[in-house]
Amino acid sequence: MSRSIVKLLFFVGLLTAPHFAEPPAARAESARIDRAYKRLAVKYGFSIPDRPVFKNNIRGDRAPADKVEDELDRFFAALENLTVSFVRRTGVNKVIVCENLAHGGMKPDGLATEDSIYLKVGFQERTVYHEFYHVFDDVRHEDKKWRALNPPGFRYPQEPPEKSAHRKTETAAAGARDDWRKHFVTDYARTAEWEDRAETFSMMVHEGPKFMKRVEQSDVLRAKMEYIIEQTSRASLLGRDYWSERLGLTRQATDSTPRR
Image (spheres, rainbow, N blue to C red):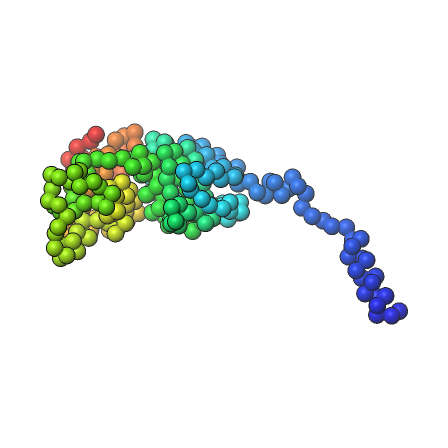
């Protein structure tokens, strides 16, 4: 048999051989997130959609279900460091894990809207705490009490000058501005008061007793810590003992903090 005939028979065999493609129903099922994650989400008071919906100029790409599930394993492990009551009281209705998360030309680890949290594949653990606090804090809530905690002369870039009229204007020497760093848990915390609060909360949860080493260097940061404790330590939120256990504080120290 000539070589050309052998080749012809080979290609005819490929064309006529049965194809065992995955049935449409099986493909649809594999695109869905396992129900176990959805049941766990219900416990915390939110849902996890199979197909992400983006709003408020937020952009992203749908991630494969198996990749989303890997990220949800990390997400729910992070939630174990909060309380069910706190998560439910934040008002988060949806949690969306996606690829290529973007907003306003930036590619953040996470974003929060009034009732939803978006996390990109590969997010950091503390991003979870940061975004949940945003929703709890009404995302862009302004509070002159918080602003008054900052050192004299400091003003957030988004803060209109008239809102810091009770303090010195931002004309401090470069050395003084460098000294401001110790009063903020990250550089990002200095960009807006709501970011400052969310970053402070996330570091308190994420770092635990290590956070207290920061507090020892800054009375401003101590005051911010006390603010967060005041806002979150009611029984219906994190509870009276949460921060004493999380930060290694004495019960007396947390009890002395006034509650809202």
